[in-house]
Structures are given as structure tokens and as C-alpha cells.
Image (tube, rainbow, N blue to C red; front, side, top):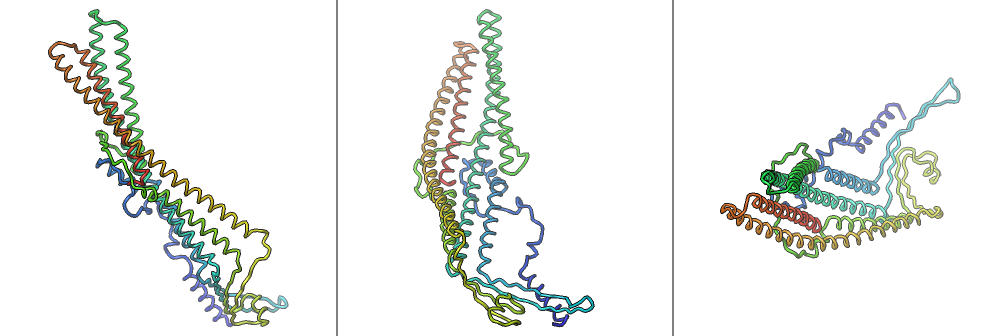
Length: 442
């Protein structure tokens, strides 16, 4: 071959290689995954307790949460695995050039070159590649379900952090009111001690009440700071600050739930998809133990085995088919099938566990939600009773029937009942979060 033709052949090979190589986008530096990866469609989490501030925080958490970004990155990797499983089903073409320089002595030399082009295609006689592709697709579906599960959990944790923040803010305000009442009771007791109408032990008890109220206020403010930081992490917004506000109201919900809610949970869907993928991989392992058939076509100088098969020293082109079956492999094919079977067994058990866990969680969540609603109703009734008794006490105090210390005690009872109702409301909110998680966010 003349040098000009050789250069042209090498250039054509390079051009063809460029067509089959990486794209410009593939060659660019990796971009920021947090900014690039965004979940598609509305969030599966629906429960916002009717609070517009919480609804806004949930939207931020769904678009900025790092746990969701990590699940999206795993989905991106699953997409790449699907793409990889498609490559064996396409023809593979290799281009190149063979160049040599040599001679019988160092005083003379000869050079020669030839371009080569070889195409191979393996026929998927037993469906090995098809099953591998199916398994990758099912794993991709499981990864998509994992994204939905991550979005559900992010929504649940955001609701929990918000409720805890509002509860801490309300607890801090209640502690401040109790501190003011305790200070008033202490002042009245000090006056009684001076008048000989109270004992020093009564004064010490009032001081302990004041110290307890002060400590409760500090604890509540520290908890509010912790939950604000947690919300900042969940929403991907450092420095998030929420002004004080009331805890969200929790209304009662229906006690029953459709049976298909369990099947619709993303964790159950992911477990089922992984079971089907494991079965497909086992079938692919069985197919891999069967004979393989490869077709090869070549231009230029092909593999020496083809020239030997045709008994021709110089070939311009050739087409060959190869069918082969390993007779002795040390048990590797059997081991591969056994490993795939064990993986499928694990996936089968994991799916059954996911379904069982989902049913248990749903039953427990419904029972806890009903119990929390009953406790909340009881706490509200007790608060109403305490308020009614306080109003009677205020009337009697105005008439001079009871003193200020007794009135302060009635006001403290109202604060205690309000604390009990606040705690019951927080428990009801937690029960509502558990219920929503158990039913897949719906």
C-alpha cells in the first residue's frame, strides 16, 4: 500500500472512531449534581397539616434535600446500567492499521502497512442479553421507586421538624408565662412570710417553681434552635428562620384505608421490582451456560485463525461464524446459576418482608392515629374545664372570696392543661406523619 493510501485509511479509521466515541457533552467536566438532579413530577408526600408555612417548607425539601439528590444519583447510575446492557446487542466494529518496518540487516529496510476493519455480532440465541437488559430495566424501576421513598421520608422528616419547632416555640412562650406566674406567686408568698401567714418552706417551694419555669424556657429555646437547624438541612437552605407561630392544628382523619395502599408504597414497589430483576438475572445466568454464536466480518488482514480456517495466506475480506461451548469450566457456570438463585431467594424474602412490614405499619399507624385523636380530645376538654374554673376564680377574686395566690394557682392549672393539650397535639401530628408514611404519603 502506498503511503498516501495508508494515511487516508488511517484517517478514515480515526474518523469512524470519532463517530463511535464520546460526545462533546461526555467530555465536558462533571457538573454540580445538587443543582442538576431534580425529581420529576409532584411529590408523593401530601400531608401538610393545612399549614401554608409548612407547605412551602415541604416544596423546598422536595427540590433541595440531599437525601433525595442521593436517590436521584442512584437512579442516574441505574440509567447508565440500562445503557450498558444494550451495547452487547449491537454490532461491534473495530478499525485500525498495521504498519511494520524491518529488514534483513541494518543497512537496508522495508516498510509495509495495511488498514483493517473487523465487525462482530453475537447472536442472542438463548436470550442472555435480553434478560440482562430486562433485569437492568427492573433495577431502574426499583431505583425510581427509591426516589419516591426518599421524597416521602424527606416530607415526613420536614413535618416532624416543623411540628417540633412550633412545639418548642409554644413551650418557650408557655414557660415564660409560667415564670411570670411563679414570680408573682413568689412575691405574694414573701409578703405572707413577712406577715407571718406563710412558712419559709412555702417560700422555698415558690423559688423552686420559678427556677423550674426558667429552666423549661431555656430548654425550649435550645430545642427550637436545634429544630430550626434541622429544617435548614432538610430544605437545603442554611440560615432558615421562622418567626414564632402556633403549632399546626391536627384534624381527625378516616380510620379505614384501602388495601391497595400497601401495594402502592414505593418501598414495596422497589422490593417487587428487585425480585423480578433477580429472576431475570438468574435466567440470564442459565442462558450464559449454553453455546454462544458469534458472527465476524473483516476487511484487510483478519484474525490469523480465519486465514488458517480458509487455508489462504493473504485475505482481502472474510466472514466467519463461531459457535462454542465450554465443556469443562471448573463449575463456574453452575456456581453463577447458584449465586443468582440465592440472590433471587433473598429478593423474594425481602419482598415478603416489605409487604408484611407495610401491613403492620399501616395497622399500627391507624391505631396510633385514633388513640392520639382521643387523647387530644381529652386534653382539649380538660383545658376547657380549667379555663372555666379560672373564670369562676377570677369572679371570686374580684369579690374578695379568694386571694391572689389562689388565683395564681388556678392560672397555673390552666397553663398545665395548655401544656398537656400542646403535647397531645404534637403526638397527634406525629401519628398523622406515621399514618401518611404507612400509606405511601397519601
